[in-house]
Length: 141
Image: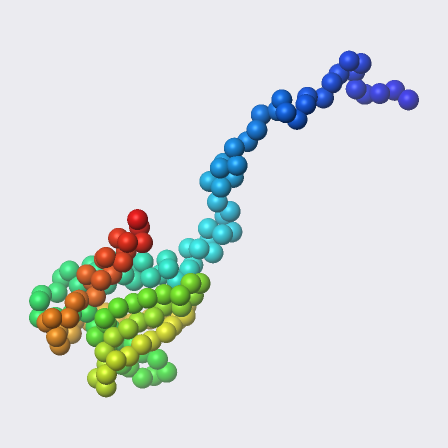
């Protein structure tokens, strides 16, 4: 039987082949993971926070950000104190309603609320935009 390998041909030794730096593989992001992460609650949180910060910039010292939430045909207005998230899919709104503290935990696909201007109840209370801006800055570092 005839060999297809020419006489005198030697395969290169593994040690003489160039090595790929493993950090190259770390830098290449899996596209499936990238798409999944773009739908995480943390991505929605960032968008919500930026919108609330921009909305609040237009308010005077006597007003604060509020939200009207509509769920099951019932509308509720709250003074928004903070928002948070739990990856992969939950956003939490913390605030005050007419009967005291409220917290709404919602799946990112269900978020639907209207930002409102409400009279500021407590001028000593830190407004939400300041808190969110600090959180976004901390997360980017």
